[in-house]
Image (cartoon, rainbow, N blue to C red; front, side, top):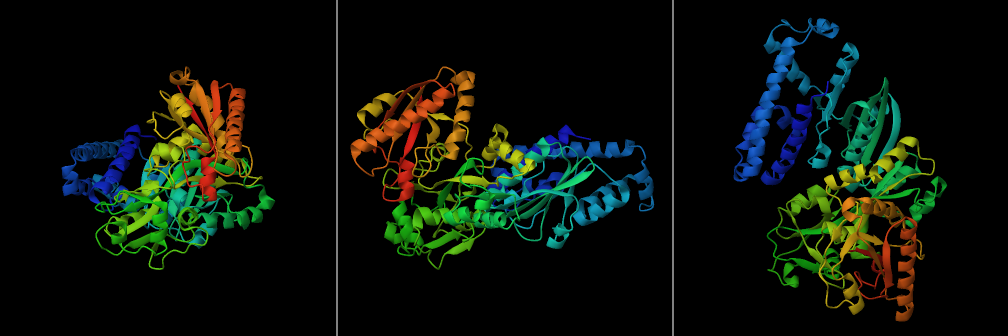
Length: 582
């Protein structure tokens, strides 16, 4: 049966483990902490924990809860009535009534592997067991705890590919692709989706290869399974092409050649097939002791192609620069190459390559001469730099990422076919819902829900623009357009119902909307001014059709660029319609 106290304890213990990892810099095991007072007591004596009073008090409170849960478990065992399974197990235990033997039995079950667990379940028909898995790497995303409604058992051994192939039950779908998405966000969404469908006996087990997992659960008497493989964005599109996956996770937009190869499955750039589920940023990171605070995109290109190879070339103390980069299969590297190195750019041969964002970040935190790039949630113990791209240097914050003003902002995508199953469609719907967006924020990415911020009025802004925005707040949504069209892109189309929900809230019901359009600097200034006004008016009409209170739309042409107009991506970012409220 569900135990609310143990559920709450599991959730608080997981938060404690995450904070303890950050404080101590060591790999703290959730399964060991979760049910072992001795392990927890040892951790509470760690110098870094002792210095953090808030963390220390949390640990002491958890230790007390753990003791209470143990006492309740023992009391329940003493009072539990005999069952048919218990009678069968009497042959295995010399003295069933002996409390010590009962405790030994529970401890033994906690240590057996998933394979042994399945054998026991099959022979004794035990039910209502939920499995939490151990993992084979240090990626904290791989150690996300299951939010339990039933008892908890630790599975020790990963499944082999042959065992996966022979796994019983109905395969619901497979998700292949981005390690950035597959590390934490996709596991959280899969888990939430399973709970929303009221599936029982949810299990997650690592497969023999790193970054691969099998999820199983029961719907009535039917066993169902989901496969997750996270080896880079390009592997997701390949899996879609070969029919090995129903969902491709990507930390970059689909490429032209991939779009062509997948044409039989539908238009992968249409709103029905391309789903923006979150915003992320590539954080440029250095060792915390490195004195550099900001850097230009052009300088980054020179560092990563080897033209700049010593920190003295950037005005710092002389020391060789060690470059760290993601592996070639990752969408993270594709985005970095596109935004920084350029299409023909080459990564310096001495670069150290990693499949994991977290491992890359941890290496830089130990290397004073290192510099690298990771997904924003993986900054960890390193330090992020402010970046400039022809304008002021911008730090990666939730707001600068949400507006996509930060130079190395990127969108996270899920791609599906026209004939996607009902299960796949419902997972996509969950990811885009408010509940799914809460999971996005929880794992450290930027969710798509609108927020408002008061910004300082800059002296170099056009006078009319300064007067209009003075005393207003800017929303975290920018409307952008499909390539070479005046049509809103897929994210912008879905932003409209999000705005409807935002203005339906009591605290926002009296706010009014002001829209301001901008263009790149291609072409005549007067033409750009008229084009920016046309786009702002087009957005205003769409919002009014949805019942939103638009007071004014205006355009300012190619004024206030937020990105470099010398490259296509920079020009695309400058073609925008901002939304302000007051």
